[in-house]
Amino acid sequence: MVKKQKLTATQLKDFAIKTFGDSNLGRCPKSLDPEINPDLQSPGVSILGNPKGLSEQIRGKFAWRWHQDKDHLPKTEGLDMNSLYVVMLYGVKIPPEGTNGQPHTTNFLDMVEAYHNLDSQHRQQLEQLSMYHLSPISPPPGEEMPRKLHPIVSTHKVTGRKGLYLGSDNSILLGLEDNLEEAKQYWQDLFGKILSCTPVYAHVWQPGDIVFWDNSQVMHTGMPYDALKYQRIGLRVGVVNNI
Ligand SMILES: [Fe+2]
Figure 1 (cartoon, rainbow, N blue to C red):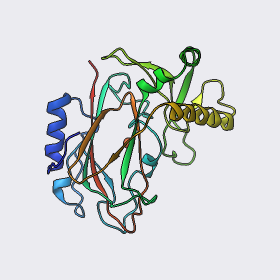
Figure 2: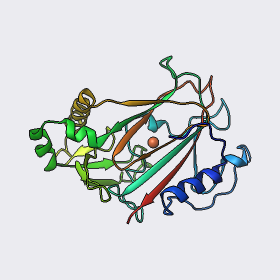
Figure 3: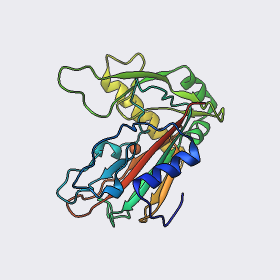
Figure 4: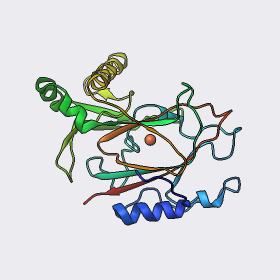
């Protein structure tokens, strides 16, 4: 984490690429949105929250569930969730509180630690299992939701460490495709078990904070805030290194 920064979106992206490598996702140039400060816009940098003001729908509400960014993308060239995949999140404008009345946070869970906190019998059992990861966004009517099958225990290509890779709460255990209720229950039970034995880091945001993490083995969740009362602006860059 780095504090007290004042960067444009382009400066943030340059910092991310210089620090972690030049393999950034989604850098297609888009035309500038005239309703948003141009300093907040740069190809490959996502704007989160409600940057246009209180009347705007929050961008990315699905981020209020435990997830790993871009996890659901089955066809992205060069994207391998076992590689170093740094996500950098820069807090430009921070709501003074969440809907729970507490300071606004993003919460993080180390999935390597989560794996090691389970007993060895449970770990061995999970080594045999895989899950379909689904997009958190519903597909257009009539279109099939893309699914990606992935082992529950992942081994990081750079560090060689094992961690749990669970997708979000809509993931389906292989074998339970025809019983979605049971699949949801399985995920919730497993995640509940993990939360009971692995501490969550809640980052309390201050404007100017840059938080970055290895998205391949860390889960995170945004916390809800009242977007009719408060504005939030966050800038996010993802850097994938597939060496
Ligand atoms: Fe996210």
